[in-house]
Length: 207
Image (cartoon, rainbow, N blue to C red; front, side, top):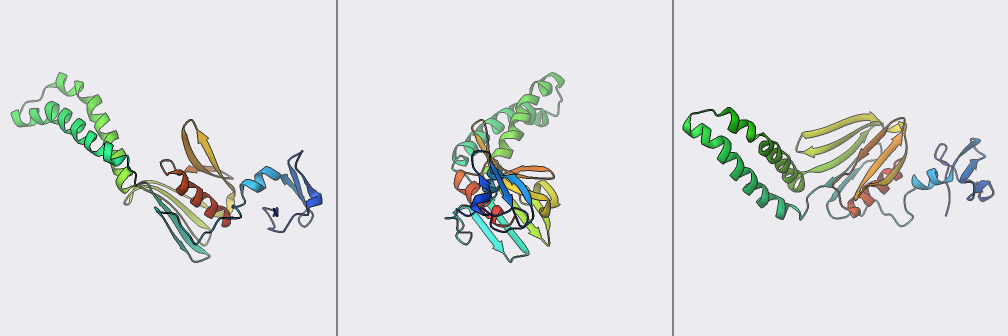
């Protein structure tokens, strides 16, 4: 396969590539870099950006583009009923009963805190598994990463030009996408393998 310099985007001659030493030298910009770093930043030769997988959307206008992956999952069929039983049963028994009686029981309220925290976590998981999304957009070099539901969630703004490579990584049983450059930005937690693969390869085409 062709190896292209990540800086000047010109093809690196095969004679300047040393697989054993993991090096690649670009004679155009006289830059020596890691071969594996270049390959990790190169989209698959079979990748087609104009064919988004199910659950992803793309709006690409060259200088301005947005790619988005939905966190919608079949796991919601389990989490939503479970959360309704857990949160409804525990919170109504501990807190709603106090409201109805018009009495405040400190001991009972403190005892219910773990159930309250657990319910908040479960509700958040349910919302992400039904309405959640991971979105990456760039306009004139200014990039935004958003992970959340609607307009509520985690935002990160940065300069897209500072990103050198896009990798897919593992942390235990979980996979995620890592944008690496002047800083490291991790995203894509909760997206399935196909969505992560599509988004990661599309981002590589934009480096």
